Length: 393
Ligand SMILES: [Zn+2]
Image (cartoon, rainbow, N blue to C red; front, side):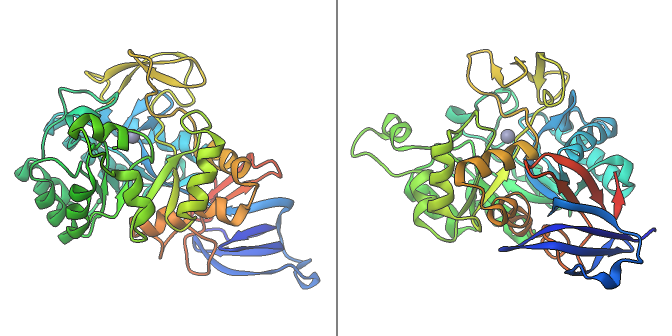
C-alpha cells in the first residue's frame, strides 16, 4: 500500500495544528507533526490553507443514492456507502428499520458480506450495524412502516444481537420485554439506545438500570412533557428530553440538517449536553443524492412512500421523514449554529459517535495508530477529498 504525506490544518480533538504534516503508512496514521523545511524533499499532498479532518462516523443512517440498507442487497449497501463517503463519512453504521425477520436478516447478511470484502472503491467502511427498528412504540412509529413494528421478540433479538456486526441496539423503553432486550444487548456488548418512544421518567430510569445510555435523534419521535400529558394526563411528566439533560451518563444525537431543528435548538443542545455527549447523525434515507420524487422508506418492496422535493423528505401526512443530507451538511449547519468551534463540531461528527459505538480505538480522530481515514475540507467546510485507510477515494 502506498504511503501518504498530507499537509494542511489538522483538526485534532480540542485543537487545530496549522500546517501539520500527517504521515500515513500501511493504512494507518504513523505520525502527526508540524511542517518544517526538513520535509521539503518529500512528496507531499499539499492542502495548505485547507482543513484535514478525521473521517466522519455516522451511527444512524438508512441509505442514499436511491438505495436503502433494508433493500437487503450488497448492491444497496455499496451504493449508499459510496454516496456517504463522498460526503465525508468513512465509518458507517447501516441502520435497520421496521420490517419482517427476513428483511432484517437479508440486510444484516448484505452488510456482513460488504464489510468482509471491503475495498476503498466500496466507499465508507461498515463499522457495525445499528439495530434500530422494529421495536418502536405504537404511538411513535413516525414514517416507518407500521406493519413491520412489533414489541421485542426474544428469539428474534437473541439471533440478531448475538452477531458481532451489531454494535448499537435501539428499543422503546416502555415496551413489554424492553428491559430483557436491554439486558441481552448489554451482555453482547452493544451500545444501547431508546428511540421512537413515548417513555416517561420512571420507564427511562428502569431502562437506564438495564444499560440504556442514549436517545435517538433528539426532539424527533421521542417523548415530551406534552406527549406524556396525552398519555397520562396530569400531573405532567418528565420524558426523554429531561432525562438526557439531567443525567450525565446519557448521550444523544441531532439531525443537524437545518430542516429538522432550528439553529437555536442546535445551539441549545450543544451548550446543555456538550460535544462529548452529543453526536451528529445524518439519518439519511435513499432520497439523498437522488432526484426529487417518490421513494420507499425502508425496503424497496413494501416500505412506506415518502416524497422528496429536493430539499427535504416528507411522509404522506406532511411530516418530516428522516433526512436527505450527508454529514458534510450536518457539520456546516452545526458550525453555523454554534459559531464555528471546529474542534467541537468535528468531534460531534467523528470522535463522539466513534466513542459511543465503541470503535474509537480504530477511528474517529487524527491519532497515531488509528486508521488513516481523513477528509480534506475547504475553508467553507466543503468536502474536497476523502481518504480511507490511507487511500484516496
Ligand atoms: Zn432513522
